[in-house]
Length: 271
Image (cartoon, rainbow, N blue to C red; front, side, top):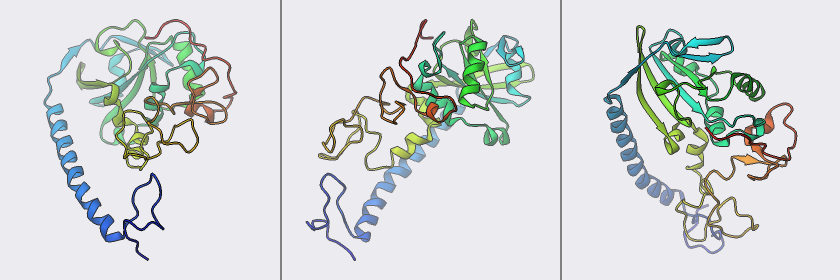
């Protein structure tokens, strides 16, 4: 059965118009032209990225991991390329008080099997003290290697919240690329999938058709302009999105021992 676009018996208020398959395919093909152009532009940007210069630094600078201090050079695990994520850290905070934004990135970096197959190693760096970091990594169930770069300056340490790429030539080490903010979204496959859905991310900055319900509205069934960016990255024990004192980064609720909380418990300062 096919329906006409303006058939009042099939139209759904605030939803995409209902059309026959041929009409849908025509609209889909029109969008595909733009998607292919976007892909080609991404390829061109990647080509330019490969042509960036690089910065050499001391690969013997020490970071701290489960076996104590080791030189940064060892993070390559004998490979020539290395990708790191620099995870922000709140000193002295309990697990639920750590950064929800960095959690989304680290959680999507489950392991590096495909990177390793390509000759690339992966590591997560943070400024936390190793004893605190080790406890957090165990709680979260992370299997990728983590290291503390507390007090480390330059490309091996520096500001957190970045993805960075490094190249090794023998014992020489170079920084080739770094990005932050929405540049980190490339890791987050969940965001890419949400961008394909009719309701999107449910964030206020998105361009939605007029009258389209936006997930995240606190008023049941009422069209919304969306919430703040990343509104669903923390939730309470019942799964309600909230950044209040009873919330945790969303993946923490799947971890053993993730009991309801009364405070974010953030102490110290944000690195």
